[in-house]
Length: 151
Image (tube, rainbow, N blue to C red):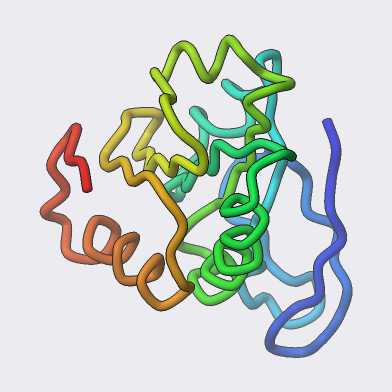
């Protein structure tokens, strides 16, 4: 599986973050949590998204989708701001039709929030980073998540 190189928001050191691993990635220099952003597909989704300790924000997107391209930087910003709390997993529905079918994705972008591999919330459409962060935080920080909640 692939890994990404990310800069620590605290000290600036570059770190390699694997797509799948146990625990939460931390900076090798200062120990600060790192943003965890990975791509997943039909074959790798289980290891990358379902067997993960932090919450997983799954972005179902397509290359031809304008709103998907607009929301991608906002999602990456949220992943940086909530480093250590969430993992962002991106799934291209055209390349991974089994996952799109499994989660009954009808439109893109569609976001799923997983907790221990179980869908906690779902949201369709693009939104700015503050709105996305607020949506994620309502399920991640208050502990009142309702399985299958939709917005």
